[in-house]
Amino acid sequence: MKCKVIILVLFVYLGGCSVNPIVHNPDMLPESELARVSTEDIGRWLSGDQLFTNFMNVRDAEGKEIAAVSFMTSLPSTFVLSEGEYLFNVKCSNTNGIGDGVYSFSQIYVGIEAGEEYIVYCLSRSEKNFLGISMIRQMVAFISKSENYEKERADNVVHLKELKTED
Image (cartoon, rainbow, N blue to C red):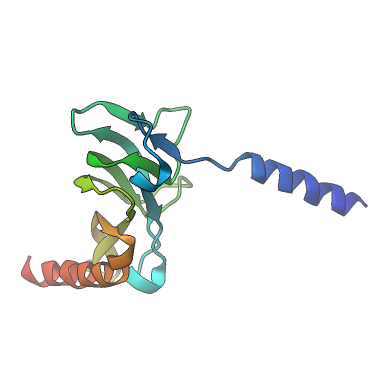
C-alpha cells in the first residue's frame, strides 16, 4: 500500500511539472495555419557527446520578445507560432543543468511557414587534446523541417567534421 501511495504521489508530481507549449498567435489563426518548433536532445550515439538543446529566448521579426528564460523559469521545449520570421536564441550544453559542463549559445534567424513542424537541435565538434582526451571544441544549433530532419542532421554532422580538418 505504501508503495502505491509513493507511486501515485510521484505520478501527480511529474504530471504537474509538464510544461505546455508557448503559443504565439496574435492574429488568432486556426491551428492548421500555425507552425510547431520543438527542441531535440542528441544522444552519444550520434555526436559522441550527450547534448541538450534549450531555448533561451524567442523574438519575432520586429524584435519583440515572445518568451525568455529568467532566473525563476525555463522555457518549454515547444513553441506554436504563426507564420513569420523569428530569432531563436539557443543554449547547447553537455549537461542538463546538473553540474559543470561545456555550453555555447547560438542564434538562429529563420522564416517559419504555416502548417510546418521544425526541430531545433545541437551538434558538437570534438577533437583530442595533447593528452589524447576527446574534448568538445564547438557546439552549434541547427533548425530543420521535421520532414528533412534526418537528412539535414546527418549532413550537418559531416559538415562539422569537415570543419575540424579545415581548421
